[in-house]
Length: 187
Image (cartoon, rainbow, N blue to C red; front, side):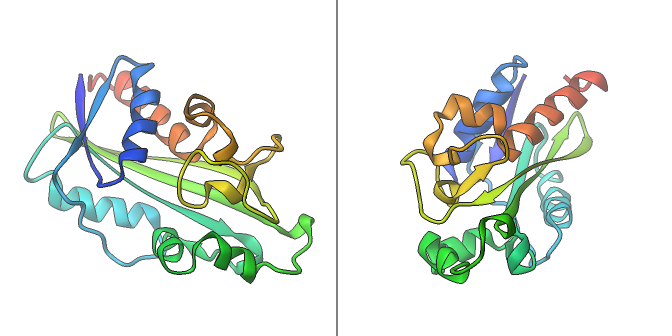
């Protein structure tokens, strides 16, 4: 089976491809643009995008994610891409100056939605971790250089794409999507 991924982010396509490939599902980048609403709820953002895109096409995937930093009351949350483009990694670290390690907890969340065979599926993945005191690594994208998942001293940016595609919030969400599609006979 082949799915189209409505995203302009090639890094997300690469990660999704690594995960879905394990299930025999191929994925390609779709030229369709995901319509995004402003919401603090990732599932609501994905559901809205699906409600518009699934009318046009089938076998389509959309994804939205966010970085929820506990000491910043969940900021940047679903606005992570905007925060990254405006204040960047340096700005996030500046906001966290003086925050001790025990209070640097964060969660990366991903919600993936799909239209397959005229049906809609929505799944979620989340990974808890800490925000490091300085950026580390050159792989990944976005806030990967400052997010270290619990149980690993490395940031996502210090992991290979193969390692990250086994551990990340997005990897978990796409694995859950593939498993649900298989379980429900949608493939």
